Length: 227
Image (cartoon, rainbow, N blue to C red; front, top):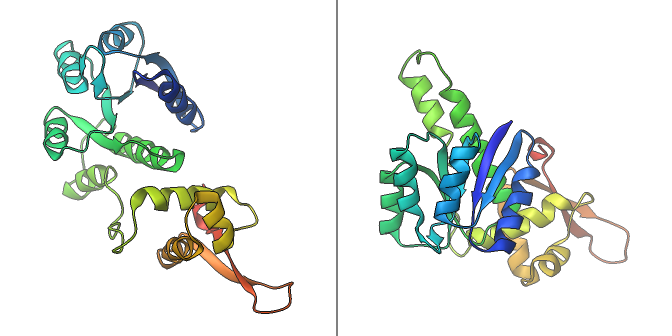
C-alpha cells in the first residue's frame, strides 16, 4: 500500500482529501495534519510515501515544510494541493522537488489522475539501472498529462472535470440536458464538453429513441476508460 500524509488546515477539506485518497486502490492515508509542524511530527512517526501538501498553512508556507522535511532526511514525494496560482510559487515548488501541483478546487477524477500518474512514475524508477534514455524518459513522462491535453478555446479544465465526473458516474449515460443539470451549465455548454470527450476518445455517443420526434443523443464514458 502507498501511504499518504494529508496536510490541510481546513478540517472539511482535509476530510474530503482523505476520503478521495482512500477511494483509490493501493493507497491508504497514514495520517492527517492541519499544520506544518504537525506534518513534520507525523513524518517522524509514520512511514509515508507521498505528502498531499496545502501551501497556505497556519504556521508557515508549505514550501518551507518541504525544505525542512528534506533537511531532516525524509524522502517522501510531495504533491502541492493549493489555490495559489502565482507562477513564481509554481517555479519555487518545482525547485524544492514538488512532483505535482494541483489547484483547488478539484474533483476526485483529477486527484485520481495525478496520484495514478505519480504511482507509474515511482514504479518506473523503482531500483536497478535504466536500460537507456527511453526508460528514463518514460518514467518522467508519467508525471505529465497526455500529449494534446491543451483544451480548445472556450473550454475550462474545472468544468471539463465536472462533466467528466458526472458522465463517469452515469451508468446509463447522459444527454446534454442531463449533463447540464448535473453540472450547472447550459445545455449548449454541456454538449461542447461532451463532444470534446467524444473527440478525444474518452466518451461515445449514440441516438436514444423512444419518443416522438428527433432522437436525443446519449453520451457514455468509453469502456476502455472505465478503470
